[in-house]
Image (cartoon, rainbow, N blue to C red; front, side, top):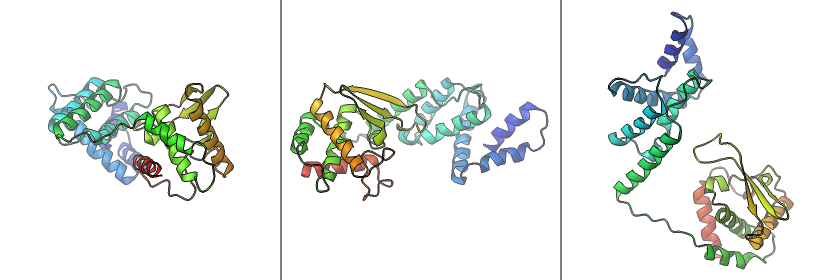
Amino acid sequence: LSRALIRRFDKIGSTIPGSDLAARLIGDSMADNSWEGYGSHWDAWVNFCGRADPPIEPLQATEIEGTCYVGDIGQRGTVQAATMQPYLSAVNKVYSLIYPDAEIPPPCKGPMVRAAVNGLIKSQYRESGKPDTRVYFPADVAFTMFEHVEHLPFDDANRHLHRSIAAILLGLMTALRSDSLLEVLISQIQFSDTDIYLTVQKEKGRDTAPVRRLQYSRAACPRLWDYLERFVLYQMHTGQKPGKKLFALRDENWRNAAKSAMLTGWLHSAMAA
């Protein structure tokens, strides 16, 4: 990775004093494990480029070559598609450092690369022969659970149950992923007389995803939205500030739990109740 940066420096002039140290200083700006990971994954990209006929210039590639890189990794069978992102991120990181103005866009991102990765995930899953154990959660079951808690008071005795049901219902009505759903802040959901507005930022694999403001009609499921509004007001009444997560409770270790496992546990506890 340092060699790639030095090559870029050297292209600016025949000999630039300090180029070696400059490359190392850029590396020092990252955590040691990140720099080492980027380095080994960048080497894999350089190896791929060198095996092409004719060879690809590692610092002059396009999304076509990046998509072919996904295919090459898939053919070699050494990396599972679900864990491929660090290999792609290393290439994109180098390009973002060397071409900060996107003079040459990072080759391992874009719609073709994402489609290839998703296709490889499905292909590897089919080839594994593992049965699909996922079970669809029927909307009528969720509504039955809702009817059992709709008129329960919002108090300490029922707050865990309300929290579980509210998360399940909001996920059902918005189709958000569990990680996006459980990252929603109290301030990111607003209710008017006719509509509900939900701001979503965190999405899987996209730490800096653009903010999306979703709008839902209150008339579609008035009882469900009324219940969720009452839940939000209860959270605020019990001391949860607008900048806090909507579904967090202060007596639980929120940060260290996997979001999908947490939501599954809430579902089981709500069904048991």
